[in-house]
Length: 453
Ligand code: UDP
Image (tube, rainbow, N blue to C red; front, top):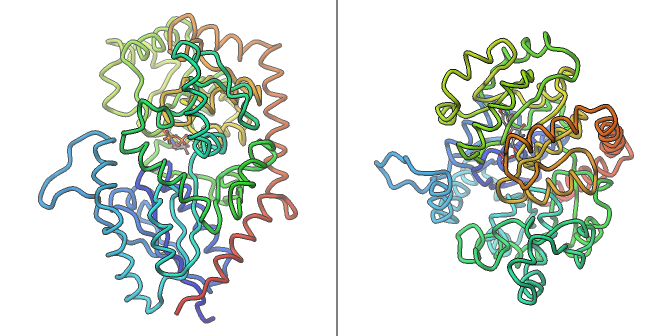
């Protein structure tokens, strides 16, 4: 079959951004019967993490420069790495795109990019091709970012103290959300940060995109969805974690042993803890959580990066080895699917929230950054499928209270019922005539109709 379209996929090299984008591309490639090829541009490190050595039909990975000066080994923080990468854009992408065009003999006919990469709007205009932007975080955070100017003008009229309790009642679907729940990048005091600058530029460019795609299902947030639909030419939500045949959004080198350990635990007894790929809890918070788990002898599975283990109380691992397990990277979806998991203690990252919904596991949210405070508030007050830890900080009492709330028959039951209803909506969205399926087909048609030269 003749190849019609060459899609240039530009990723933002953070695992929880690049991995769902690859999941989407894999699904599109599988559904497109070889008339589309995808060139996937991402840094070498991020490509290694998300492809894990696998190859997929009609998808070719290209490594772009991550911005580290030649000959130097990078040893800085996550945010420094992000900044180096941003400084290297768009030149690093342009270079790799030329290589892909010359190798395939086909000009790129459409750009499908992480929404953060706002300059793709100008690239697409120059090339006269469509720009499809993928927003990797939650719909509510996109909605809030799109209203940055309005939020700023409201903020001028309220004092700093009022932010804690004042709600965003002027934003559709967010009347339970407080100013203090907004992503830090929206706040005027952070507006000079590189991430805030990048997102604000994105806000200005996104309405020009041919379509905005988001990993979600529209039945979960009708009011916000209607608002977003009114702001973009096309707004398509596609449920990735359920739609995927291979459900792991992020594969990574996960510890499979923990799955056999879970098999031996009692039904709904295990506390699964993970704060995602970026967030780091304070040492005193880790100590408080460790103490609660140890003294209450709560069975637990804790996904913790190696560098955080040294912050645990001395001897904790030995003393809790009979009822707990720590892994550096868990196969999260498989863990959540296991009936022994009773509660998901999470940072409230969007992928984690969706995964918890699709596995019907109640959440205790401890938000750190980005959209996590917003998501946690939605989990607790709008969908009522979990609780946000008291004061947003892990303390001994707050954690015990949250665990009892979820584990108690009465409150826990209501949460599980709400989860079950949401899960059903998510499943309906991916049925043959479901909203997600329709949006997926619309996206596929859009990509197919872009013509390579
Ligand atoms: N994840 C995983 N194993 C872990 C920790 C995280 O598979 O031990 C995955 C998780 O399933 C989710 C992603 O990493 O798909 C984290 O994305 P999320 O949006 O929740 O948070 P972020 O990392 O962006 O803060």
